[in-house]
Length: 140
Length: 80
Image (cartoon, rainbow over all chains, first blue to last red; front, side, top):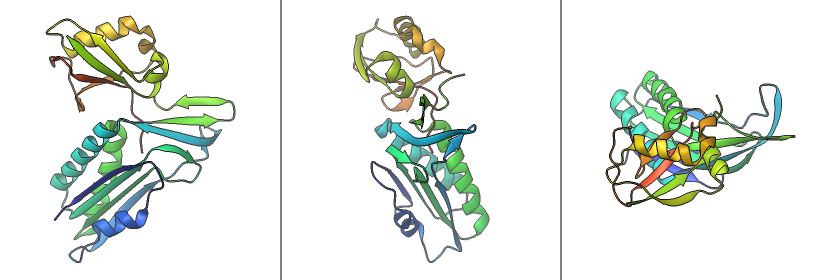
């Protein structure tokens, strides 16, 4: 049984696919994290975000995180799907779903996965403002 | 020996391209490569630390490079 689903897509993410992948009769719950594009950063209005990635390596790194999550927490299945391209306010760049027999493991693994993804997966976002654009995290 | 360099995010903007092939001395390490690339593109000093990936895996400074390696410059990531 495949326990990990990792995807990078250039169009809309589908929550139902992530949910269906992890759903299991043996599970008592599913925890999910859905990242959404916020309309402002540091009180400056954001119009859209552009995500680019080193796709081959990003998929490898996302798989590593999922494997680590399975070894660290008592979970059944995990899905991590990330979108690339231009995303508007309220659209979804990332979905994580985790299933487990008991809820704590699913919550913990979900948080671990998004936190680690933000540190190691080679994906970059550029914020677009009315008066320009900025690569997030790039400058000291 | 020749290696391929990939640039992403802000570093691609600095360099004006996303891919480049260069010649480096035999037995170069990742640390040697970093020194060389910052000399060629001083703009890279203006960003937070960048990491290096060799053939799609993060590589420490001590890793030795081989001919035709694909070396990626990884500026601070911001996915999710």
